Length: 555
Image 1 (cartoon, one colour):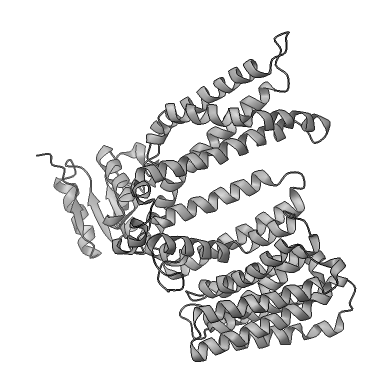
Image 2: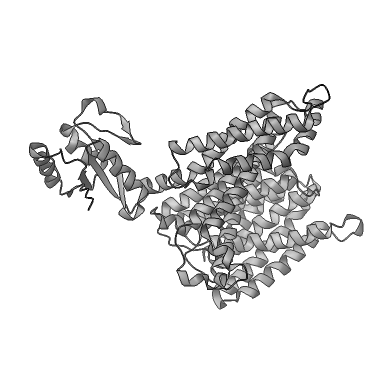
């Protein structure tokens, strides 16, 4: 009944439209959008009661989407939309409907993400949506807010397909209006809509791609969604939902930045956001969700010998990512060096002409530096030398190529600036380090926030203690989260060592264990013995906490 409540609440809240005058032509789109949403809610209601087949739901959404596109574009031949727009609009409507339907896999997830998206759509695209659709989206947000009170974990009310299809169709239909009004292939309204709806789009794409690779039917349910994989990392369901809320909010604020702040060139910010989402997807794809037998279809494919080489696949992905990073950083260097106007237009021609040479030279330099033999999971300070070597050699070779290819008879290089090459090198270094360190950062966050890991206090912050903490964080199978050190060396007190704070000496042991809710104490050094060890065991026995000791043995 939650879906019916959402639909009725939205319609009731939208009743105030009677008091809003029609001031813009675009407001005439609201009856078609609302009718499409209500029709899809009826389809969802039938599915909740009678279990429609996935094909029946897909056909229903495409048919309703077709009539919605017809209503939005009109019947006059003079105002007909291009065929590409018509097809994309129909598929987009059906895709958003089913994306919200797939996203409804955890308490509070679909409703919260949809509430965030509805508010961002209403605020950022209000000028092209018109007052009626803005009010409709605000009414939807209000209905979702009321529903979330009962749907938060552990839920007592559920939306069902009736609710998820209604929400998806309303968001999908409303998002078509600003894009159709723009009538340009790649305009800011289309980009803003994708950013605002990034969570359902990301989750659906992620699931469909991995199910296809695993040889599983796309319509077969399972615990392989983004939210499920976050839980598999050790987060609670509430934390997983909040993380996806955060991604939706970041997407919305990125859209806000593009629409109000960055008015000159959106590509660098778009590229940054896209790379971040792709990295998150790659990281989560490594979290086990299928068994080995699920990849039978992949193993029987004609390109199976190529795909079986996991090292090749991973390195190919690295190279493709670096292609994007080199292009974006090289372009950003030009944008930072030259102001908008004639100078930028002149120099961007040299950017376009020289880009293939820059890509070839820098990829070869990165490969020769040994960067592609480094593991992302263990990327650290020692790997920075490979990055610096690759970027440095690539920058020098780029300058040499520019001097050879573009110098005039007098020996002067035209169309290039030394500042551009310096900026390009700095930006590329930052980008490569950030992407390579991303997996280690995400693993660290997952290890420290995991609800399944025991909170461990390490006694001794020396070399053995530091090695132990690194291993705890690197080895998720241990399920141990180091929350701090205790060390009797006063020089280490109140300092951070390998990212873990030293909370004091043995005098602070009991208070620290109580404050940090420590579940276990590990003695990291053989030198911790005698009266010190006796006192540690006394405190742990008092608090009913186990004590273990690190043993190292080479045989």
